Amino acid sequence: MLMTMERRPAIRTLRGWAIGVLQESGAIHECEEHGWMQDRADPHARDRAFAAARHDPPAGISPDESLAEIRDVLDSMGDTCPECPPDSAR
Image (tube, rainbow, N blue to C red):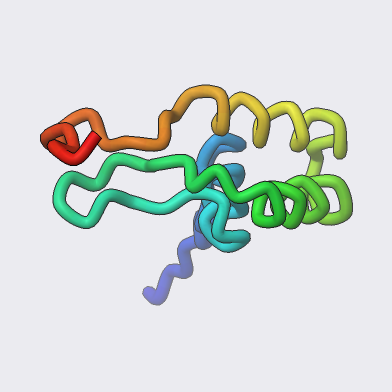
């Protein structure tokens, strides 16, 4: 008997959705060596991420909730990788 399984959504959490939006907009990027997310501090990229969250929130989530999650994710990360050695030029 052939059984079909329902596909799970690609993004399972609101935080995962927010990270995806921030990556697509260029507001954050991943450390190539260690995988930590880093804030690029690009105001134009942040504006694109906030516009995407406002105009196309995930199903069942209000625009205000999606904007709040984008802010929470940005507030939770820095602009340097905690595992990379400090730059000796500073």
